Length: 194
Image 1 (cartoon, helix red, strand yellow):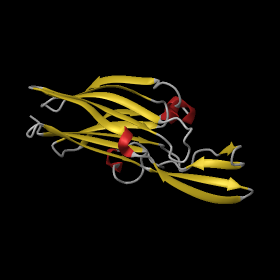
Image 2 (cartoon, rainbow, N blue to C red):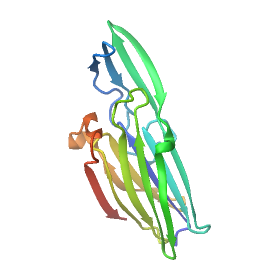
Image 3 (cartoon, helix red, strand yellow):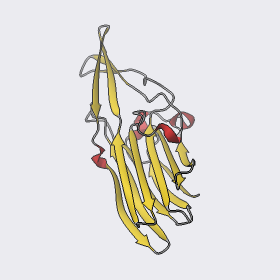
Image 4 (cartoon, rainbow, N blue to C red):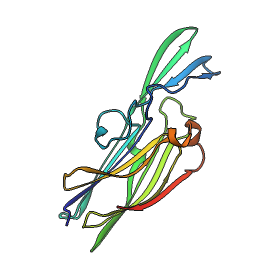
């Protein structure tokens, strides 16, 4: 039986260092946002290469969960008449939440949710995910949730400080999604037990 089961989630702009620049008529500037320049990997937490990070550690011995949440630094490159300037901001991690923790004799369930906005562009849609998680003492985990089509999403589990195991991954490049996929409803859903 497992004593500790950690669920690690992150959202990141994979594969590229900068998104394609777009013209902003308000500022009369070409605007580009920095990506995370990485692929899928469970050990990128706490490196500053994710837009959202969330971890929930289930402690079956103490019958409690310990949650961690953070957001990455957003960097915007602005070009006006050949002059380049940079701005930085950080979204509040307050919208990266663990809700509805419920314990029974043979499981614990909770909701992992994030809705993080671009801190440099208030009108931009947030990046969203919402996943119902059930963790069992044998280390099995059930995920049932939804997320936006952009950017990349990854979920892993770790049992008693062992290796991380992949639970779920979504790659926007493979599905052809763009930042426009953050608007509206979460269009991708999944359900699994591992």
